[in-house]
Length: 222
Length: 388
Image (cartoon, rainbow over all chains, first blue to last red; front, side, top):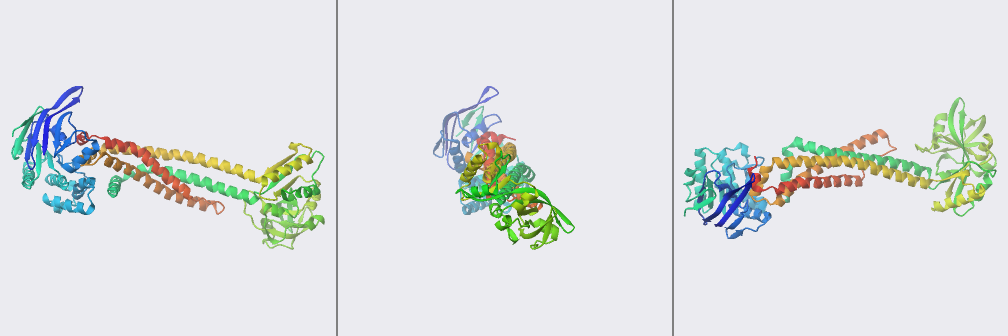
């Protein structure tokens, strides 16, 4: 599903070169639940951005679901993001002015899905995360855990190849965090490929497989 | 997708009503300025050209300044009138006269002329008749009076058969003119009497002014012919007379009002432009404020084109709504001005002005919305998501 060979990424911050990723190698198969663990500054955000096609690597080879990502234009990358990747962020990143339903619907609009099918997929996604009864609420009217569920529903609605979660429990208390993790485990049981990025090893160990990242080096402990 | 873009733009505008309204205000004021000014100039110039038309555009008028010992007489006019290019011709001897009826007096303009004058000038008789050749030949003491004189002296317009006196001489009213209502001609306050009678009353034996109409629609060749005749009459001295072509006057008037329209419209367009800059300003602020939103949208699959369209449609919607509100207010303002100005002048919005205003506000929306929209679309998703 995800294959990375010798991926490197260098940023220039304040005139100094920062090697965020150095020759990273990674292999994640279909249906796996993998956690990527590392302290802050280890390059895990950069790795997530590259996996999520939000950013392009400087060198190396990245194949996502059989597609070599490299020479794509911004427009094509947006298309790949919309079809292949479902993002779940630490800060939920829901649009505050829209209801839960509308937030979940948005990626489908960008995919050009027809209205009737959109409605069906939105309600299916919301029922998967157990929020069918909250579909008309705005994010401000929902608890943190509920907001994150909406975000997960939004990621699921587009039927992505992988779910990419960046510290999904970081803004939640531990009890709610565990509920979200349970949801991820459930989704994994149903066949979704999930990549979870976190600095919290107690969360990370719930995954099938752990990959550590430190100072830009990826240690793929198979 | 397109409906969704409209919905998104509308919800963005509706979510910040005060700001949207203030932004629109620039466009509203600009559109009002353009529409009202252009409509006012159009209305005013239409009424002025209407007045000139009422005087007769097919009219040549001549004033003799210095006859050089070769005075123009009625028989000269008759001779001029026989030329192929010239149609009707009539003297016009104007003087001020105090018109009396019993104890009532009226300060009128008096014109001594002949029977063709009403046709040349397009004057319409309401009651009775205009002057006739026989009146002139017989030095008859008859007058045709303007509508206002009849109303002032007799309190009614049907006054044919009544008598009045001018300079101690008694006249029989043979005709009353229709009310012209004109602001620049004084037909309503004029009394017309036979040229021969007037000439003797004011002791001016020679013709000092006359009017003529062309035989065909070709007024320019009539003007040329008349000019030739007068040059011969006055021994090639071009300073001894003035020949005015009314249709040339009309052309000049039209070009003046055209220039005025362009000038005022141009000045008003500048205010519309300022409104556009307001839109750009707010859209730039809005792009910065919504950086995170843009990042989220991009992360979940929005292309640059999607983001560009979203912000562009928003700018367009603001300018177009502003344009429509501006048009409605302009309509109200013009209605009020029209009702105050009375029925002589009508200030209405022409479809062209409406089209111009809407087209212009759309153009402003695109021109000033494009830069912020493009800026939004170019934001890098990673940096946009990190933006607090």
